[in-house]
Image (cartoon, helix red, strand yellow):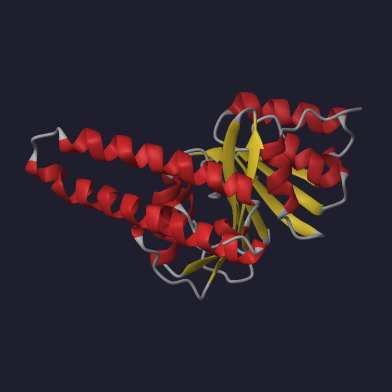
Length: 242
């Protein structure tokens, strides 16, 4: 029986350690959880959602794909239903970066270095990277995947050894630059266009209170352009094209 799982979720699954005890936060219909168990990537999965309807759908799908004996289901906000040591890997996919910050902030065991965090923000990725870096988390890897005509970034994160990122790096992390060049270029182009729109919009605003925010976006745009230029120079050197 074929599982209707997206490329975005498959990318998340590719970062899950073998034999992991996984919490799938915001599990929706449970397709990621089911894939991890069917492919023998995860040992167990705690499927969690804030809404009863998708959680019930995940329960039905788990029974249909005959892996329900290795899943538990929790109707809860974030990770409040789990104590320390229950899981060693947490996947948060398909929600905003601000929601992920809230989940991490409210989790008493989030700063355990043994826990792997796999984070795929739908929005506010820069805010998430900034929050992580300022609180000592480090991005080990950041993968790019194209799914349905859109580019998604998926981070593997651990606590410990992190250092603050510049505004430009909050949009384009050093780890992301290790990805496929075609995807990196497309991602940087998307980021630049979004920052240009933000700067233009705030430049027309009269409120003095927006000056700091405008300065942040201006700095981020300048730094992303510098990152892009440095990236292209390194690509030319690496391919022998000068």
